[in-house]
Amino acid sequence: DVMTSSSNLFDLALQSNFDGVSSRLSSNPEEVNYTDENNLTTLHILASKNAPFAVVEAVYKSNPSALQIRSKDGETPFDLGSKSGATQNVLVFLEDADKSQIRDAILITNKLQRKMAKKCKQDEMIQKTVTRTFNKLAESLTLLQYENDEF
Image (cartoon, rainbow, N blue to C red):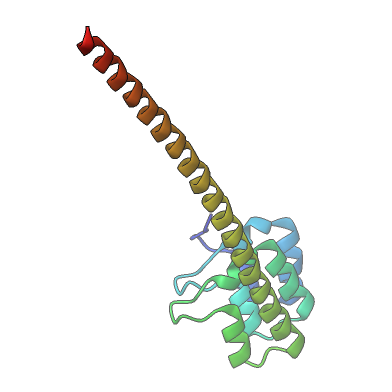
């Protein structure tokens, strides 16, 4: 869902027009998905422009995945904020949000692993049952054949 045409939200962030960013986000929330040719998002720009916490938080909440997007130089919004002196509460928020996303991803991965292990165990039990049934069938057929050979 990445927008590639221009985004007024992004441009307002570039101009450090933070009030404009807030009102534009309300009226055009889809613009938060825009990334420019350097793979920067509005969140990257806000972090690098020392935007107020409330604006950074609102943009993050509209597009949490932007936190993981790296610029062409490999930088996240947190990296850019750190380099350009974003306020401590913005940096702590971005860092905590990042840790929370990683924790969620680990929990989801662990849950999937448990489900897969359970499914494999079920498949294994089915396979054993089928094998036992076929072995019994083969035994019965062998006995039948043996009995028929006696007559």
